[in-house]
Length: 91
Image (cartoon, rainbow, N blue to C red):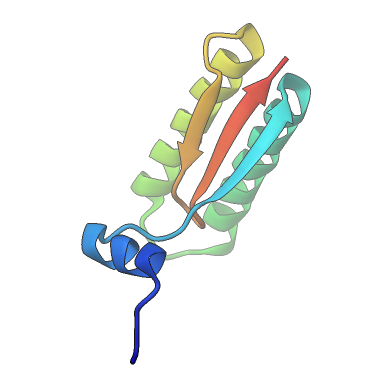
């Protein structure tokens, strides 16, 4: 008899995709965010067409996160583009 994986069924029911989770020290989290920001700038520079407004908003949100993580105001955050990740900041 076929029995579906309960984890897979729960994901299908909620419509959410799996998300990678990382635990990082504060400096590593800031470095990760800086790399993501550079990737968004590169995406804007590489595409003459596209949704530059959406990409600019992503950059603004990442810049705010960089400041908040650096100052210790944020201990966990999620990014959904280009792939879903959850970052938990440890001291």
